[in-house]
Amino acid sequence: MDGLSMGHGVLYILGTVICFYLVFPMILFLCWKFSVNREKPAVPIISQKDYGIILTAYQQVDFVADAVSSLLGMDYGNFRIYVVADNCEPSEALLFEDDRVEVLFPESILASNTASHFYAIKHFTRPHEAILIMDSDNIAHPQLITELNRYFELGYRAVQGLRSAKNLDTTIACLDAARDIYYHFYDGRIIFDLGSSATLAGSGMAFDSNLYISMLKNTDIRGAGFDKVLQARLVSAGERIAFARRAIVYDQKTSGSKQLISQRSRWIATWFKYFKFGFSILYKGLASLNLNQFIFGTVLLRPPLFIFLSMAVLLMGIGAFTSPVLAAVIFCSLVIYVVSFMIPVLSKTTDIKIRRSLVFIPKFIFYQFVSLARSLFADKSNVATRHSLKKNNS
Image (cartoon, rainbow, N blue to C red; front, side, top):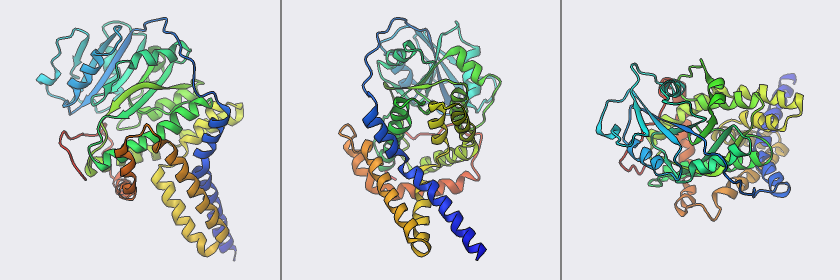
């Protein structure tokens, strides 16, 4: 009987945690909807910060020329681009006539985002005021830096832009884009407007140079996850990461199942490795009544979507036989979550291809489970997803 009671207790604890995270987005949305002035006034740009733009390429250079071309085409002139071609052979794709572009070939394989960034910093031709981190497959909106600068003018020293889909050529790419829309809305725009920090996305993000160096100096982070370490250190140190939703970076979405599994296996392994930061940040937020740290710590502790959604369905099934009340509560929470997910994804600005792809979410979740299994054996040294130039309708 004691064992049965203990089992019920565990079931209720897990159910409570799962239900909380299912309704958490809706709680954030309602707080944001009714208590926040969501349209911030335009901030005039006074200074023209000197940017060092670090563009990292690992093994693949197919998209580098387009990425550099977009950066050179920005309506901003005070910057220099440093392309770190890690484990890449010199080729015509890495030849640029513009003297604002410098291509760097590390003497040995770095296989690390932070190592690539600091290799570029070591080779800065002048001391830049700000650092903009870009991936080799990104395309910059012409006003990217102009929009980032508005938040630097407001006093922020870390700013995350909005990563929008560059390609919607397959169902998987559309579902990947839907996921980004959801996260940018709740983990970017909403929690920032509510007084917390936007989560970092790995690229399309800018920092005060001295701040970035101080946060990651002498830190060699292998594999994916440097942005997870960086955001945890920033928020723990009292910084707020701004979300600049008009600072747009077009990002290459994963098109095929093999790419998705490879990418997600690294991301899942990264969450299990770094979610512990959420405990310390949440504790700091509670101890000091710091809203930024409290909300951010809560967000960091949230499992990947497919994990807690699957756990919710599993617990609901168990509860149907052991606790109908718990099963009913979980079901209602699932309905609330679906509504909260659809709010940004079905907005009028969302591409029709993304909306149509939503019926294939179960297929996407299946690949997530394959990724979870693979994450146990993931190659921790792999730092980038290799994108194909060919269409894959998987």
